[in-house]
Length: 417
Image (cartoon, rainbow, N blue to C red; front, side, top):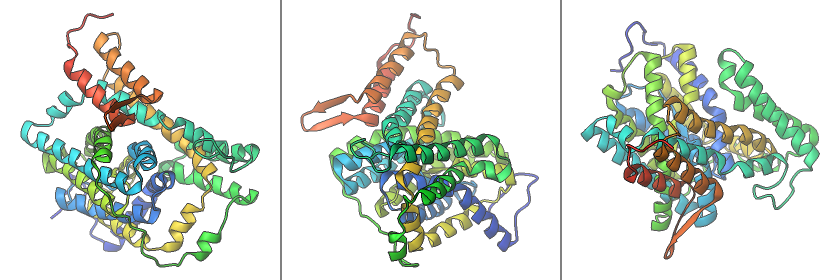
């Protein structure tokens, strides 16, 4: 039986739980579909795997934590680069293997306690990695906002129209995120997309052909993963940053509900649930899963702490996955609209990394901290590639390995520079 925090009643009305569950999915909607739209994955599959992943998470954690799992932004850059380098099936194989990182961390937490995460992956390691994740695709976001393809090789929309649409989407997103009240403050991405899409309609840069051709009910376009060692080893380190974010999300929802989820069901169970949900999603061709801070905000606002609500959110997500016209409508959103959103999105991810360093008071006057941050940032943003025979390391994977190794080998009692 699902228990609730002291002083909070259970929502025993099934229709009310279903209604609040639909509202939670609405809050997560914009962020949920943004990841597949940016990476070329099928949004209908993303709905399916978000719902299925959430149900799996609830099964593993005993349905004690009121969270919803869906597309992880931290994997946007790796998925785009991995698809270009290895192809989509091999990239999905790498993402499926990323779940094993969560399983390994869950085992460490089970054996050694929560403190082992802080020792292995302190803020000086995680912060720069998150910054690189956010800034590594900054050029692609700007190119799309200017009406070009991601690599800037081709113009899709005239510059004047492109800037009008993308900056309107961006300004709307900024305004809603900072000025809106109540539930509207939780849906800035949806607001930005609606405004950008409306302007695109007025300018005639939206095509409805795919929507007309799509059936109302259709099976999502599932894609099976292909397991290749080069893609797996390239992708595995990427899971470190979102795994650390997971710890923060669990602490956040715990502070909202007044429960210590690190103890019950235990961080090892939440990590295991998140990891297996990520592996399951990749096996169907969906994006990796993570706990959503937007939904945590909605839980805070509505004071709806009953985890059964998230069961309904998951069910609605699975049902929407089979609406063929929904996926076609989402894919009709012009890339220039997404470009405007990406400007904020990638910058906000980088800001999370900066906040990780600031909040933890990482002292960059200490030589070891300065060395770790400097090398990781230049390697990541500069595009460093290290070849070992036929195997190459680059991007987030290289940054993660370098940060961990430097943190392990550099002396901690360093004289300040």
